[in-house]
Length: 202
Image (cartoon, rainbow, N blue to C red; front, top):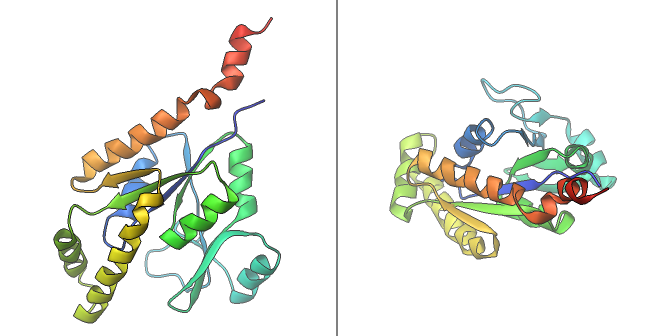
């Protein structure tokens, strides 16, 4: 049988650098596709349809949920976010690997739907450093930052259920570790059975 693609699910608390790492992972870990989430919120300045998100109406999103077409979804700050199962299946069935950048709740749903998924948690080097990063973004009030830090502690508690943990202390080093995880998974024997069969066949 042709090799089925691997699903790599990356989660992290806000401010840990998950999105930056995932975007930086695409070229060194190629061939790797990036899962584009659906959302009902309006595009922010600089965001592009189909690149950052698939922006859809609430009616469209709720229709997908009612059809059980969402592999994972959640309501965040009044807006719906999720990943359609057909989009994931199309990539994996073609033999290509897929990277999903989701929160902890989303990663649990993806693992339930795709037990073979590899879950990776991005950790900050310390809570002090995480607080510094959140403050330096300059986007949130002190109260919002405090709320994000409290949420981060709860999310980090869930890291023990993941397959791998990568500390994002230095970006380049963390990126190299992510590439190593994906490379190691691709080298697992069960992912090379088609080649082994060809080499040992008549």
